[in-house]
Amino acid sequence: MSSTPDGALSASALFGGLDLRGLAERWVVVELAAGAGLWGQGQPADALHVIETGRVEITVRLPGERETVLAQLGQDDVIGELALLDGGGRTAAARALEPTRLRGLSRRDFRSVLLGRDAGALELRRRLIELACRRLANRQRALAGTLDGPPSPSRVGRAEPAGAPADAYLLQLPFFRGFRRDQLRDLLDRASVIQLSPGALLVAEAEPSPAMYITLNGAVEEVIRRAGSAIRLALLGPGRGFGYAGLIGDRVATATAAARERSVVLVLTADEVTGQLGEDPFASAIERDVVAALRQAERPQARLAARIDAGARP
View 1 (cartoon, rainbow, N blue to C red):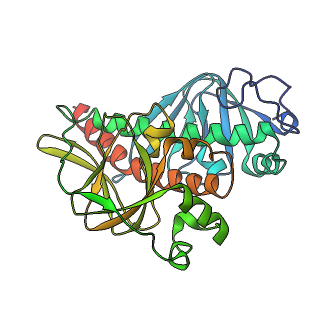
View 2: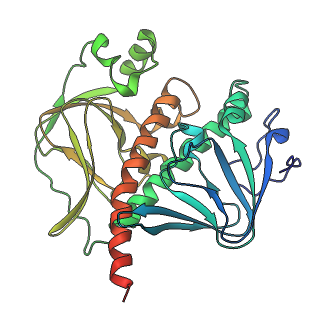
């Protein structure tokens, strides 16, 4: 391993064009032979990598000592971005398919750069969140591709304006962890609150994403539905956000979300969401939520990949 020269990452969509104080000397070069592992499933997620040359395969273990391929990535692709968002365990393994050269950045070094809070650091954080949201949307599209027919969201139930629950209750919810009371009040002043009857549709797959939502009471189900079949992505209880994957990306929803039971949700417009992506505590809340959504999306993706793999074997 050796230090990365200035400008080596100019082709990366995540880092290209940014003036990031103190970042250039923090990169290390990683060179892998064909078949060598970059990290294993379950290992601590402590670094992000950008592929300079070569290809990397992402795999997940399955019951019965089998594994299945989730993705193959190549030049300029970013892998391991969850490490910079939450530092949890690796949910899949990564290995080189051919001689491969990567640039690595540790989570500690990334966070230290963000502490400077200069314009480049804030833009990098925004791009990282956008990358994670695109990754989530792409996973949902891949899952949708395994079902036949057009999207078929159920349009029942209704929504009506409602009051927000007490601040003390909201500050205990996962999304608002780290918010001060004044920051929470500021967010509530710029958002709206609605109450949903069971079945009320908020987000429809393949249609424009109207807003981002946060469940305050009740539960919202996120699914990919086709005639006669569906893939359940998540049951989103109090303190979980949804609708932002398409909103932050190309403004087209990649999953359907509807109230599973009588529920209360917070509604944030696209402008409010994009205007806060680089700033705490909202940015940290989105980071935590998109990581949870990505980890949840890996489960049905791995199960479907396993079934396809089993069907392809003689």
